[in-house]
Length: 198
Ligand code: GAR
Image 1 (cartoon, rainbow, N blue to C red):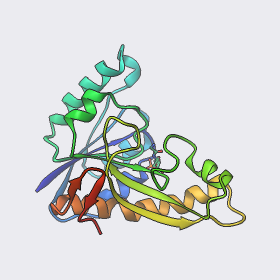
Image 2 (tube, rainbow, N blue to C red):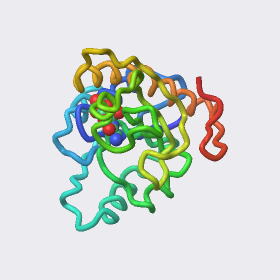
Image 3 (cartoon, rainbow, N blue to C red):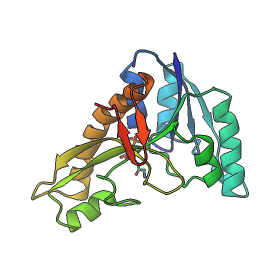
């Protein structure tokens, strides 16, 4: 059995998709948030999952918050740490501690559109395809080895909101499948390439 700890900052729909996938061999050990009012915390608690909130505003520095967060995460002995809409830049010490065992999902086809406002930028750039990426997290923002990607069309009448909705639906398929591949020990990292996902 592999322990999964999930970090969220908001509604947590990707967290919900991973929980509801009921991946064989995976146990959702805890859901943690940097925002005490994150809607996803209540959803997880209602299902009997351990939840904790650590308000980043209560810490003097990024490093101090990350150290406190890591201490709480490690109390659950995670095999995999899953960032699911966790809207924090992570310190190098944090990313090194979880090297090779931390996933993030990003709402673009990386390496295009790292950072924020990915859907607006994809539309403005005239892209015909958009999508989402699950990747291992490294110290460089949105640049770690890519585990899996899903593409969706950009339609002529798309707005940021309609494209975001289409990408989010793809995220809910992609993320549980990527977690499952990790849990089944299928993934091999070779530089920026990851082999063994679906
Ligand atoms: C998702 O679209 C995810 O890809 C994005 O935030 C949303 C969280 O939704 N993550 C990032 O932008 C990370 N840079 P959720 O809370 O409903 O899962």
